[in-house]
Structure formats: C-alpha cells, structure tokens
Image (cartoon, rainbow, N blue to C red; front, side, top):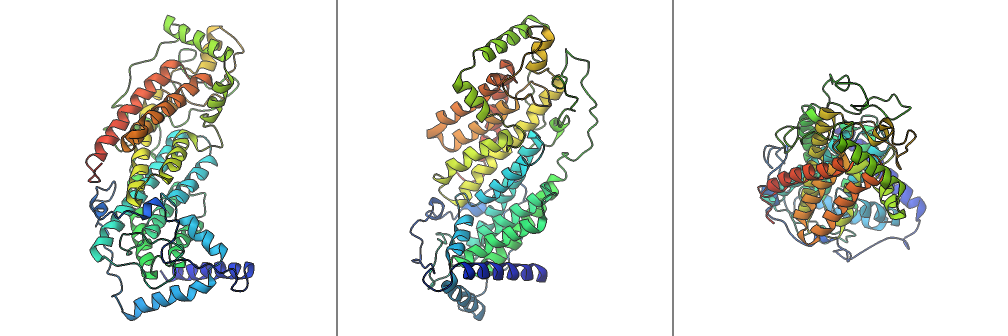
Length: 489
C-alpha cells in the first residue's frame, strides 16, 4: 500500500507540474458551479437498489467488506475537504481534460476502449477477444453493484462547500464507483494482456480515482475505498477466468479427414486453425458449448453444397458498392477489435446518451458481452465439430473457378457456423431487450453483419442464417438472466 501511495503521489505531482508549466498564472484556472452544467445522463437519476442486484462472479454484493468512511466533521474529513479546496487554484485545462476523460457514460468507456485497442494489436482470435470483453465487463459490473451496496450502507454525502468541475451524482459518495471500476478493469486487463505493463494499467486506475478528487466530486477516502474494493473484485474475476478452461491444453490435432471434404487453410497457406478447443470453454449462460449445436451443413460435393457455391460465385460477380462497403466495415480482420469489438463500439455509442445511470450502463455492457462470449464458444463448437470448408477452398475444389478470390481475406478456421452472425444475433437480442424501442435497428444491424460475410465471400449463406439463429437463442438466455437480476425493466 505504501508503494502504491508513493506512486500515486509522484503521478499527481507530475500532472500538477505539467499543468503548471503549460498554464502559468491564474488567468487559465478553471472553476465551475457546484454541479457541472453539462452533467451526463448517468448523473441525473439515483439508483438506491443497485446494491442488491445479482452479481456475476461475486457471491453477493457485500462479499468484500468496505470499512466505514471518516466521520462527518472529523479532522480527517476536514483535511480531505482542505485538499480539494487547495487544489482549486491549480485546476488547468489539462486537469479538466483528465476529469472529462474518466467521467464518461458509461463510466467504463475508457477501459473498454483500452480493451479494444489491446485486442486490435494481437493476432486475430475472435473467441479469445470476446472472452476478454466479457471478463472485463463482468468485473466492472460486479464492482459497480458492490460499490452501490456500500454507498447506501454508509450514505455519505459528497463533498460540500467546494467548487466542482465534475458532477458527484445523486447517489452517496463512498466508495467511489469511478475508482472501483478503474481498479477492477485494470486488474483484469493486466491478467488478460500480460504483454501490457501492469504498472501502466495501475496508473490509469489511480488517475481515474484522482480525477474525482481533482473535480471536487469525491473525498480522498472515497476513492481509496473504491480502489481497494475494485482490486478485490478483479482478483475474484481473475480466479474465475483461470478456471474457465481457456488456458487448458488443446488436444485437437486436425480435421477428421482430408480436404476437400473438410477444412484446410486458404490456398497458399499452412496456417493452423485458431482455437480449435474454444467450444469446450466454460460458458457464462449455456450449460455447455454444444447446447445449441446445429445440425450439419451441406457436405462437400452434394447438390446443396454445389448450389451454395454457385450462389457465392454469382454474389461475388455482382457485388455492389454498398455491399463492398458493408463487407469492409464488418470485416473484423487483423488489426481490428474483431466482431465482438465492433458490437462494443456500437453499444458504447448507443449507451453514451441513453444509459440512465452508471449501474444500468455497466449492467448493459456485461449482458451484451457475456452473451457474445457464449456466442463465440457456441460458434467454435460447431466449427470444430463439422470442419466445414470455406468458400475460397470449396469453390476452387469444385472446379467452378480454380482461381476464385473472395472479396475479403479468408480467416484461419472452419466456415460453419459464422462467428460474426452468432455474435451479432446474441448482441442484437440483448440490446433489443434493453432498448425495445430500437429493436428493429439492432435486428437490422445483425442481419447486415451476417450478410456481410456472404458479400465478403468467406461464408456460405447457411453459415450466416444458422449462426444468427444460434446467437439469438444465446441472447434469450441473457435476457432471461436479466429478468432475474433484480434490476427490473
């Protein structure tokens, strides 16, 4: 703890030093009314029951005890108020930017953006990416519910009599949700992406916590308690992750037979298939990866297989500019956050103006990402049960066009069922439940994402239609779970 405090003190001194150098004099100091005039939607509605909602990994919202805050009017509280007041003259545009960065709706937005960036920098691995989004979102959601539990146990008002540049919100101040979310996200991301400096992630969590003190929205003890709580939640989620079988040895050596009946890497490649055992990973909602396993696809050489191959050749020949645009948008190839990441980008943009409270925004992201994580497991179960060849191989091996090229690059795993379609069916089902007024838009996006794989020339029509159906069934499981989590409509 002493080391962490020393690191945070040094980081704070650096921020202040840089700000002072950039904005000497008092003319650029930022001061505001007690409540920021541009308060986000998440700051406008109290959520007194959120601390009773069902958690994902924690056994209960009060699994980790949070000690009482300093007594009202005590010397320690007065000292913390003095810290905020003393900081007011040192508020600069740089400090205001830090406050704004960490005060978004949903609060976890910067952390999800970091997750998206980390996935984009890795080799393409869709099921591993959706696992990472789910684990981080679950940690954030559980940390939020736990923070709300203790907020209403202690019912501590936010700092008063201080000038603020951030809205403390209508809920009690202790512990800080921004700090709890930051520590939970940082701890899980450090486990998921060991190639990233863990110290840097801890510093990000510290900055998120300090930003609330900079803003006058939280006491120092609020954020210290939030950080401690978030770290404990992260440890619990990491322990859960270590038992989900994603790190277990994989004993799959290859398809049950040779091509062209079964999958082979794209022509000219010797790449091994990506995550052939992902269908065995522990799901969040399903009983097992094969719960919704569909029947087999058309076998190579059958009339049905030839018909779908002829169709995709014709689609490629007649591809429109709009179909090319959508195939490119949804491609989710190397260097992107992959299909589940695209849906997270959609969800973040949507929730920015529509999540009425922090707990509900983080609940929504957890539900969407848990559904997509299970969608990845289900899709990979089917892929490596049937080992269906991709169109690039199938069209050439049938002799329809020995040099036939897809519009986008063929991935290194079997065709049936489409991961894009399965992810999209799951995400759209959950978002449609959460925001029924826009259900038609979400359904249309899912259909578009699914069809983009046919237009891109990397999936047969049956892959997409079946994937959507499986994804929707998984989304229904998430919706059923949401109906039991205590959050209400």
